[in-house]
Length: 246
Image (tube, rainbow, N blue to C red; front, side):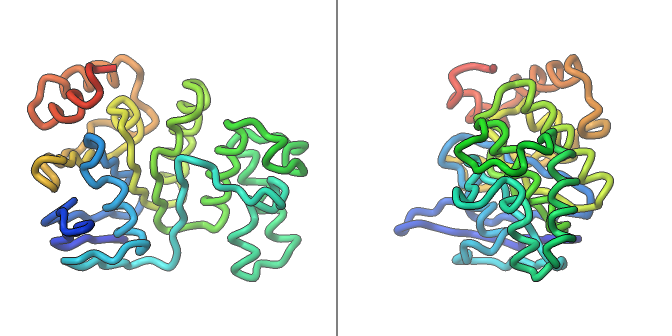
């Protein structure tokens, strides 16, 4: 296992957010964290990534490096798209020519044009900035990728393309990913396994494998799967928070 959380619990200002979390990720696996607002999805991801130290439990990491993609691109405005994508490589001491080559390859993979690489973030559309953020994460050849609702602000067509790219890259390159999302359809498309968190119970209430291969599930399969989930008690908090199934 690349990453394992053992009996993890955490609280803010005395209020327990998550408790008794046991979770493991294997190489090449995408695990989606879903649950209502306030259930601790992002907190759990931050603990897994080492950004937050849990009050209880342990995190076991058996990998060299990880990368993160946030809901906002968080590009450095004084760097071009190329240098933003290559930023982690520069920090690691990769020679300039080599990191520019890697940045160009990763940019092409997410659909950025060669001309886009010399633009600064304000010159890029929101979707282009998010593509650059994903390319930046994958440029360092991570063993684990943490993603906090990375596609929630992009249009449906780009969202699907990026979902497919992430699933294919994980299978091809062997990294595992912890993916936070509010969207059950997105989880059904992209994940190998689904972890359902409860705000009321402060922990995992359901964990299940999703049939077939991520990125290869057709729209009918995803629709039918989410429709079936909507009838299950494990998903009631998510659907109550959303008002109704989308």
